[in-house]
Amino acid sequence: MNSAEIETVDVVVVGAGFSGMYAIHRLRDYKVVCFEAGDGVGGTWYWNRYPGARVDIESVEYSYGFDESLQQEWSWPEYFSAQPDLERYANHVADRFNLRQHIRFSNPVTRLAFDEARERWNVYTEAGDHVVCRFVIAATGSLTAPNSPPWPGREKFCGDIYHTARWPAEGVDFSGKRVGFIGTGSTGIQAMPIIARQAKELYVFQRTPAYCMPSGNRPLDKEHERDWKANYATRREQMLDTYGASLVEYPEYSAHDCTPEDREKILEKAWNSKSAFQLLFAFSDVMTDAEANEMVCEFVRRKIRSIVKNPKTADLLCPKTYPIGGKRLCIGNGYFEMFNQENVTLVDVRDSPIKEFTETGLLTERDQYELDVIVTATGFDAVTGAMTRIDIEGCGQRKLVDKWAEGPSTYLGAMVAGFPNLFMIHGPSTPAAQAQMITTGEWQVNWTADIIDEMMHKGHARIDVTESAEQEWADEVDMVSGLSLHKFADSWYNGKNIEGKKGGFMVYVGGFPRFRLLCEEAVQSGYKGFVFA
Ligand code: N01
Image 1: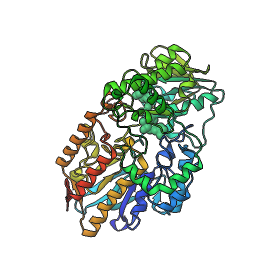
Image 2: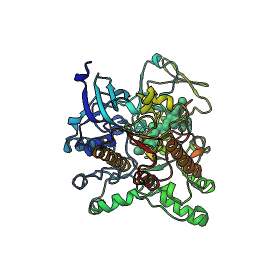
Image 3: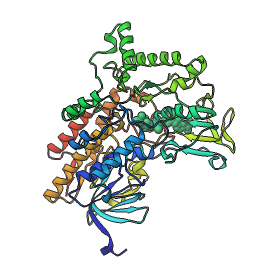
């Protein structure tokens, strides 16, 4: 193409999920284009439309705070919103703030290449767009790239196969069907009880049992809503000062300080709490002290045994090999109860792994299962997958995928040395799903946009970070994860959910206040670790 025909903008935003949408809004004084793979806004809440998809953070918190009238006008029907309500909210925001004019839908970015001489990014898309820009904001999400384990024989299977993260908008009718469901993480636990109500038979293929607590979801009561609306400004500030950017109770007492009777009462209260995740915050040391953690694990196992009538099934559903919270705690509605239904069968694929898909179902090492439909809720190539699936080429034609071959390196989770003017929101080594993602995403967008504003104001063409700053950030990330029990679980946090994926712990578990402080200090101390040109 003739260079005169190539479109030039200030900022390209990749992804029109919640962070990408806010980035468009925050940077609207510049020329901004956003490329989005889907044909609508909402990111995670656009793609994950499987039955039962629902947020596990209170919606009054899990929503934008940047516009007071938006949060005053909007009403959530339930405490923990279902996917259709979250998607409706995303569409409302896109319309209300005229964001669609900047978004090119069904148009995923395929390649990003930095032109060092011009100090500009070349952005190429699947639909054939080529845009040149000064800054790229990759708002690509932590849980974007679906993971589909390479079982042979998929093409042979005569029925339908679905991945929960690519669910058909028109839904799926499971009536009278024999359904095989692979995956018992947060997604599977939400979807299965609903599918089990419809399906003739449901076979649950479990590799690792999950800790799960009830969601406490209910219609949002008007008094609670009024109270939040009267105090939004203060509450949003308070949220930023908590570990997970969420106002759950954070006790100061250790599990060891309590008598067994008091511990039981506290755990029972946390189990029945209206705030999801309260079990992880039942005591101050659940995520740092193995014995305290085990007390909570055993409490959940007792719950499972009391709910599930078949003792063998109950035992198989009890997690025994990793600490609670080591993988993200699942929040469910009737998951364990579902195993009391006659049409539901639990299959242990740790003991007898899935070998292949056959014409009529699934073959494990021990048995053949006859199925009409197979649903995979096998998670994501998390944190890095959305970035490494784009061909990204920085200075010296170095590819991001090569730089990250042994695991992702970043500075503050925001930038990668040798990839100037490319900012990530919820990138590797940010708190990601350890903290409430809309509020922390908004905060990261503001922090990034302030840097861009300053560069534009001062006439800096280029910002990069040093490799020593990356190393210091890696040391910080290792230090805080070394203090927590997360390392004792194989999960998407450390890439061990996917065979062969390399890298260490990819999520910052030092808490959002510390993360925010370190990001703010870096900028305020004269851009420590950054290099301008
Ligand atoms: O994915 P997962 P997810 N053979 O990776 C199994 C967020 N989220 O989509 O544990 C057999 O947790 C795998 O087994 P194992 C939330 O942050 C939030 O459920 O690796 N099984 C596991 O059981 C969450 O953490 C909400 O042994 C295989 C399952 O597939 C994140 O998304 C709702 C397998 C994958 O679980 C991801 O959750 C939903 C194999 N080869 C999701 N490979 C809410 O807000 C994988 N599995 C409520």
